[in-house]
Length: 164
Image (tube, helix red, strand yellow):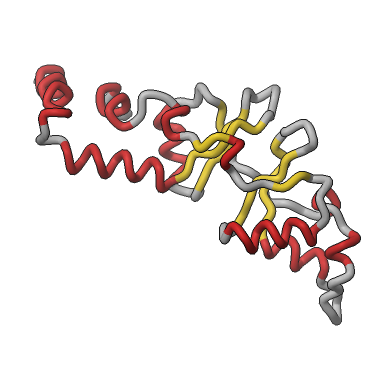
């Protein structure tokens, strides 16, 4: 279990780590594969979230998903890029968390995924943004490198007091 003081020093809330939905590249499930391919190639990410027109997360799309969808037994049918919509193909599962997810759970998931999709609630999968492994590692690195500074002196003092 992660000590609550360490958790607070790294991240007070999910929102502190989150990149908001407005800043995250994504595609709609109603877009064509051609559009998705263009977005993926421009943002240089290996996957991006797929949202319904109501902003609900339905999965992640990758170049591999697109290539597999237009590949036949003998050829790559590029015309299918314009004909197929994102909702017509198999997508990767999106690892999701809610805004109130415990920090330790988030940390555990980020050991396996580059980013997590943040949703409104389990019942309401409205996409709110992402938390990246990079953002969390930057926070942890900052804490480790600055433990001996005055900024974290109260934290160190409180931890020493509690651990005695």
